[in-house]
Length: 433
Image (cartoon, rainbow, N blue to C red):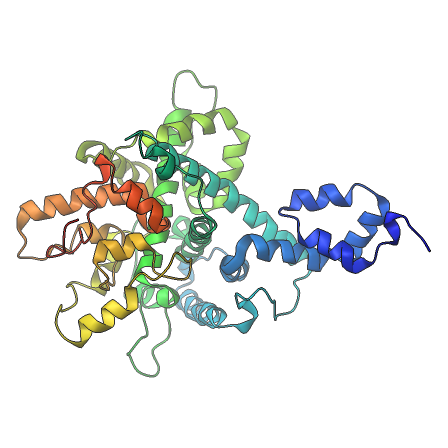
């Protein structure tokens, strides 16, 4: 009976490979001996796909959809809008596809090697940007009360990581749908754009086609908006650092800025081409404070200098303001339904995050992003309350609250700079804690 490692049963090799955490771990193990490499080569697809599912978890459906959803030319008119509607239906069906069940058992066909390579290539870009986002946020959380810094700036949980990673995928999906660099006029959008992207088909009767956002709740769109804000800040930081006197890097041109803003693979390529510039830009990110002057300066820079040719317009104010102008009635069935929809239950990527439920005191809102700071105060609240609300929204915008777990949010709210984000801060009649 053979007693060397090469004689081990293939099932044992599978178990060893399936316990690994990363592609580099797999390739390092496969390179240790020829018989290990032979087994890996014969089982490459299931081993790599198992690894991908372990790393992406419930985000896998977004990763697979992004492969089907390339950057589109909005100038195609009716064909473009029809394609968005069609793919919105595909994406909706993927949300309920039993192949994506979270019980650890894959029920669909195994992807081929080419698809796996594309999935891993995109995941690599997402991981690089997710690492940068998390580090920038944690660095800003370290600036405060030393007694609570260890909890506020602790490494992200698995759930937090899933939220961040998923939001980067979804932000790219929105960018591919809007295709900002292929639109001839800044903020050129039509009712057809609104129908294809932002229309929700709930309760609208037969014949109403789904919009791309149909599969996402407002808090999920809010998470995407936070990631879009981070990418905008990062691109502006790179632009600023490339223009400093002590750098030899050629200043970023308008077209390059637009490409990096719209395509995360091109942004990652630039980050890796100029590592010193990248380090300087990332270090400068927490320096952006949500006070009025600095926040306005950043927003104005994005709007007036470069974003005119590359803004992902479904995320800012005007595109989604029509989706809701008033808060739900606090009396009656509408309020009961709203509470049931958004009440926090647990830290899970598929559940309402604590930061969102805490902001709204469990009522539902149909908008996200800067609309929260612009229209939610109500006409009868006065300018004083509106100023307080906008100030709180700026803190919210800079800190990515709906991406973090409850334990981190509770600790952050003890810090002075997050005092404005008391429980129910969005709802003027909500309780203060």
